[in-house]
Structure formats: C-alpha cells, structure tokens
Length: 379
Ligand SMILES: *Cc1c(COP(=O)(O)O)cnc(C)c1O
Image (tube, rainbow, N blue to C red; front, side):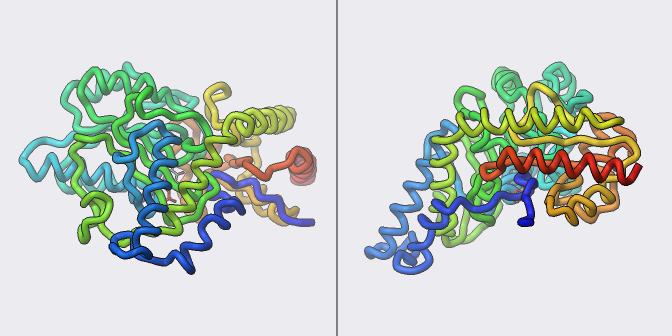
C-alpha cells in the first residue's frame, strides 16, 4: 500500500502547477532581478508579479510585502526588528505574545529579552483562545508589539484576530500575526483585520520550502534583520530567490481561487474524522471545536502514548504527527498543550492528523479503521 500523508501542517507537497511555473527560473530565466539588462528585467517582472499575487491573498498593498526565507525568518524579523528599534533609541520595549506561539516567535522573544526587552505572555483558555480582556491587563497603552498567531499549528485553534487587531489599533500598538498555518487556508485581510505585520510561508500552502513573506505596514518601526544589498526596498538584503518567489506567487494565486471549495471539502472530512475518533473509548479532541483550521484534527486517547500510536500508524502506512514537526524528537511535552491546561500525561497522548489538497475520503475512512484496530490490539 502507498503511504498516506496526513501531516499537511508540517509541510505540504508542492503543487505540480507551482513546480511547472518555477522551472524556467532555474534555466532560461536565471537572471539576477537587480541586473538592468533583459535577463534581469525578466526576473524582476516575475518577482513583482508574485509580490502582487501574495499581496492579493492577504488584502495588502504589494509595496508592503517583503520576501524572506520563510516563516521563521519573518517571525524573527518582526520581533527583533521592533525590539532593536526601541532599545537602540533608548526607549523601553514591551512585547506581548502568547505561550502557544511557534518556537520561532518564542525563541526570538527569549533572545530580545536577553537584549533588554520585556516579554509578557497572554493566557489562553482551554481551547487555546486568547481574550482581549487580558490584552487590556498586560499590554496597557505602552506595549511596543502585540504578536498573536492567526491559527495554532498543533491544535488548530483560530484566534479572534480581527478583535485583537481592533484593540491594538485603538491603543496605537503595532499588531503582528504569525499566519503561517492560516494563509491560503482561511480568508485573511490585513486591512479588515487591522494587522500591521504578518508572517507566512510557502511550504505550508503547496509552495516550495525556504521562501516566505513578512507583510509590514508602512510606518511600522522594524529594523532590518538581514543587512547587505538594497534588495526588498533596502529592508531585506540578499539576491532574490526568484524561483521560490515565483512558486509562492503561483501557490498564493491557486489558494485564492480554490480556498472556498477546498475549505468546505476539508471541513467535511475533518468532521467525519473527529466523529470517528470520539467514538473510541477515552478519546478527546484538543483545541476549539468551532474556530478550527479546516484540515486540523488534534486528539488524544486515554492511556495511549503518542509515540506508540505514531510508530504503529507508520507501520500501517499513515504519516501523522505527535504535536508539531519542529518538536519531533523532543522529550519535552508540548508547550501548547501545557499552556491550555493539560497534564503532562494528557499531553503525551496528543496526535495531530492534518488533511490537505490531496486527501481523499477513502484515506480518512481507512485511517479510522486502522486506528481503531491498533487501539483495540493495544488494549
Ligand atoms: C511552520 C511554521 C513556522 C515556520 O515556518 P518555516 O517556513 O518552516 O520557517 C512558523 N510559524 C508557524 C505557525 C508554523 O506552522
């Protein structure tokens, strides 16, 4: 049997339409976008067309879209960029974020804390949701940045981004969101949601790895992270990853066209999967039942350690994850599950099954069947 990939939150396969569009930029159209002759101009045009497509996906003006090497760099840029702007000019820096952010945000915050910034963590409720009353308490009027992810990569909970954006806007605080799991999967508008900075990554939306974006609203005071040449309007140096950028542009365009129908299709598969899992004795679902990414199912089964299930499922041909890919191999329990109030024991049961563009109904049915068999054989 062909292995079944059910870990779309870790990374997605590159859509064949994306691969096809990228190919010329490895061969004939290899020019440096900064060169003035025709080879360069062809590459430049492709980069700017991709920028427009990504901007359209998030409802942003294209001159506020900066290409980076991916989600981790974008997250580092906004946190360190704001902190350095503040600290270098002798001002205080207070960053307010959540304990369930991706490691890229958490580690960047830990770093700027060493450099003199203050970092505060908003509590989350048992579903992983942030509440604006806590912003009122922790951010006050003088925070330098609020950073709350659009949707969580482990438990799939979608945060009330428009509400948080409105609160930050009313208090004059720049608002960043890590939308790596959300962009291309659920509608996002930086204008409507009053987002000042946003991170996204191509390989979570059927594009290639190693390319992403930081959207930065004009006037957000974030120092550059990568210094060198004048690329990206002097704010992110380095010769553009033209093929990657073109791939991200096509991926964004496809996501925009197919989002509505794909979302409905995935929610139906997700709900069938959740129903089947909850029929198992001692099973629970992590995260929010209502505000949840279309393809995310995070769950636990009492007494079933995720490592055991993961190995048995792998032997049966199913690729799923215990929490996040980034923490695979880590012995620590998931920081996300601990933050939503689970015990270490509950957290050690968490499995994450994430569905995507090539997931078929039969695969979900087969997965449920296999999981049921494994659980009863262990019991
Ligand atoms: C994958 C992920 C990242 C990191 O993106 P890379 O492009 O892999 O560096 C950041 N945040 C979230 C929520 C993610 O899921």
